[in-house]
Amino acid sequence: MTATTTQRHDDPRVERTRAAVVEAAADLLTTEGPGAVTHAGVAAAANVSRTTVYNHWPTREDLLRATIESVGKLPPDVDSLTGDLRTDLGQLFEQLVADLVDEQRAPMIANMMERALHDSAVVTVRNEFLAAFERAFRTVVEAGVADGQLRSDIDVARSMAGLAGSFLFARFMTPAGLDREFADAVLDDFVTVNAPR
Image (cartoon, rainbow, N blue to C red; front, side, top):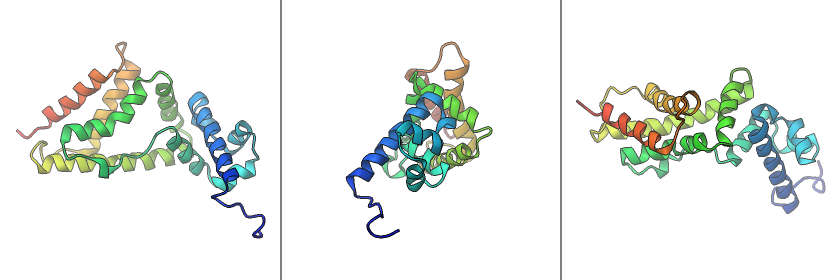
């Protein structure tokens, strides 16, 4: 590519195109699920060429990652933790609970879980997010152990699965559903049950 044909990242037209593509991808993710977030599907929805989409997001994983981040799904920021066990647990699970109580976003989560059974790009992005979440959760648990609020033999992976699983079970498997009061009670119970004896 010559200097005259190279797209500059700070070019407002390029940024508008990127924003339009991500917006189209986010709409597809929300309405049709992660299976619809392909280079071809997003290009058609954004009314741009596939080449344009590939230029900015060379792999489907890149495209999915950008799309998921655009709808507010970001790995938890360890630097924003307060050091207070219950507050930090609430902060870590806030995004999941907020999505599960939202009538538009909850089906997207169910769709993502189903799609991860057979879509390697979804699996890759999901695993990246879960690894980042587990690092943050481990930080919170280790701090809770260090300051005597949690027992020292707590299993981080099982604890994380138990908490997230409780929210998912309440939302998708019970007639009562999930609300913030239930979510708060689950987190309170976790702290109580896992307190040093």
